[in-house]
Image 1 (tube, rainbow, N blue to C red):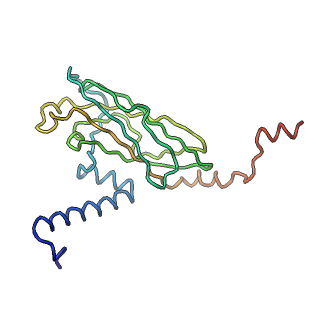
Image 2 (cartoon, rainbow, N blue to C red):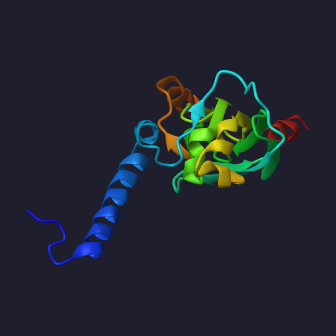
Image 3 (cartoon, rainbow, N blue to C red):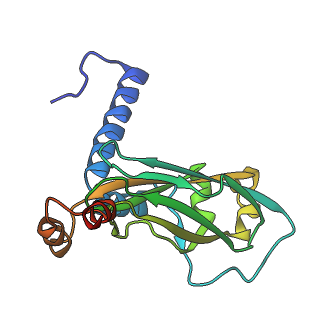
Length: 205
């Protein structure tokens, strides 16, 4: 069976490419763990490296790292970077923070996927510690600051494409995931009507 039988040459290639992107994108966003695996295997999304410690080499040349944040459409949190960008020497360890807040009146669990652009910079972006692909549970009204430490590998300056990269953007997208059973049960056990401090004060007067 031929796919896109009425398309010729470049049109057929473009249509097939778009189809692959749509299918893989749908599968990726349907499952955060699958997205993690897909990124690591294919490099899609600018898959990064993981390092246990900082770089032994720090260059005088600097690079700008920008930070982006977004939410899946069904995720009730607010989520933003604490800083929009920072300028670091290549090889220098950076520490950035992202702020997440749960305005809902129930606990919400989330997991974050990441991407790095331009994609060719992903191979030189080393994360030492990160909150991505880890379960995060925020209680009603809770706000947390989540750190990510990283450095840009000095090898980027010798790479054929990487040497022209002067700005890297690190982005995270949070998706809602199922609450652990114990958290879900705890939420169900909360009484429907709670007596507030103001109500207590009125009753005592």
